[in-house]
Length: 213
Image (cartoon, rainbow, N blue to C red):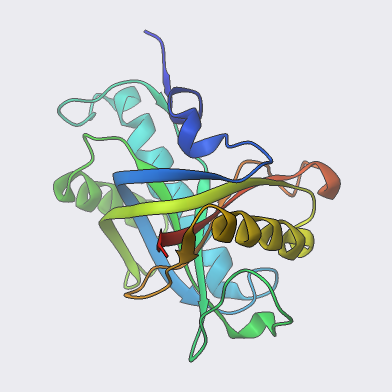
């Protein structure tokens, strides 16, 4: 059976061009962990990664033990994503910032068959393996981002502001404005592993919410 690879099947969502473009993002299901702090140094971000990948791969590998959920199909675990903001500030992906002040939702998309029941099952399985894990900031969510502008950034994360500025100019030229109201946030999708990829070759989708001017 051929595995569903969301990155390949939905290239409009995961493989934008280096030139910005407009997209209507549909509702998707995510496992999401909320936290705050510098992702390079804080323990809460490391814990979030352990939870997200532990649950996501636990669900994916459920077939190996014959415990796969109803409707299960073979798939590739989608990439890590992040929504970012700063308390009392509309963070828009650029500007000098103390990374210790970051607030974030880290998340991984889940296949359509993942329900609350499947999510609770996966948490129970992971907790048996790693009893120290704290799931208090972990949720299964339906997330519909709506109208957005996105672009592919290639290079180090710290170089993203230049790409964001290019995207902002495109938004204005196309007759839109950025729309960070009602919890709409700066969004990144990580297509490269910084542990294995040279910084100049990292690929990151940057996505901002917009509305008509």
